[in-house]
Length: 185
Image (cartoon, helix red, strand yellow):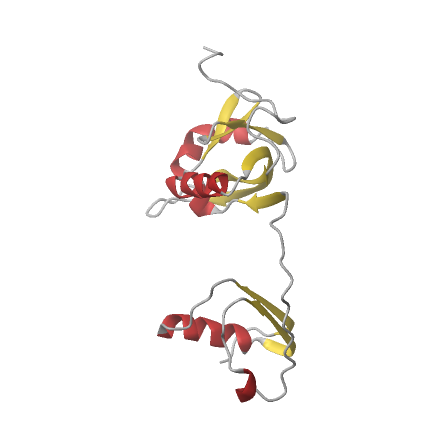
């Protein structure tokens, strides 16, 4: 079976290489999902212009600057999942949209309690963003979902927050209150 199809498919491919079979397969699957329109934005030579009939080619040579702010919705791989097991009572008190305070690059707090711990993977992502000049400036509860650890039957509430990063501010220079665990002991 072909799988799910969509009327319009947009692919945003930055420096996408089609040298490996897996990357070719992924691209093929994405392209074949379009029923009416397929739009590919890329800076890589994916297809030869002369070999594709029925395709309108448009070359944009304009330089696009990086945005001043970006927003990232965290996923399961971005948070320390096991930490949530000990935070169930607090998680019951929060709801989507509640502001969270940044605790360095370690995690997020709600009303002075560390509620979310970042995974190593996400801490590395924050460090990469900081090298590009982006610093965390705000955070909020986005999704509260159920998760269970492999091999267990009990489900736990976890928070998948949204973090805003900006080029103009750093942690502590924003409207978000910063929780300092050493100061509050």
